[in-house]
Image (cartoon, rainbow, N blue to C red; front, side, top):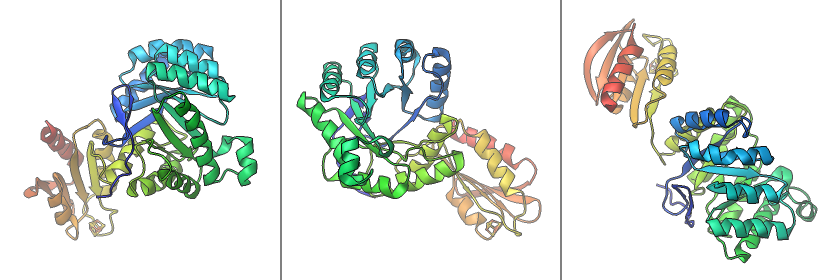
Length: 353
Ligand code: SF4
């Protein structure tokens, strides 16, 4: 088990981030924040997928005006994401958000940043200093010759000092670049410089496929080194996909567990049934299961019985069109290839009940 970097705890609504809290999963809505109904519907879908903290962009006064109703309906703590206008940050705090995300590169003068820090401090609202390589302050870009890891760290720490100067320490930091090596370097550099909890992510990672891979590699490397307290996978896709990918990253590293962990073989000419469609069908049908359960779908007797025995529910191909069903490590019967997905769904639902 990797030793996690020790960080101080901040609380975002009822979710603890940092300290001894498990690594949490967050996402961001991608509908207009002023459309309360659309936001609420999306937040509910995110919560059902296992999202624990939700962020909404607050780009204008209409969006801020919608925040009280969104917070009221949200089953998750709500973070307001503010750029450019510190007055929107003040208004979002007034509206009752559970945390703020601001970008030191664009929130304005020191005086304005201090005003936001003071208002957040009065309401005990944590602030995430979200540094992005694409929007670093000009002096830092000139000093370091570009958006280097050192520049990103200096930007975040400089802004942290402003918040600390008003006597407030409920700070989270993120240092996101769109490539894995720079992001990893920046977070590693930050670990020795403060004990604030770190929010991990690869920004603008790409589509559901490429972004999931890039995020899994980047976030996975850091988590495997014990770095990171909360994660957000950024995808050009339905944000529910971000949450699903986030969970798979945490499950793969055995940091958290939730829902079905599917073990399925890549199939080959030995397979006695259509593993590809059965595995896909099971994953789709059992996406709503929250309880941790291991399910194996294996094509033949080479690795099938071994993996099926290690799972809670498993099938292993036997001879053409037949498979053996395993429940809790025991072979219980031989089944026909037709209806394997139905049978596994039934067994899993009984098991978790
Ligand atoms: Fe091929 Fe059997 Fe391995 Fe699946 S378990 S990949 S069918 S050898």
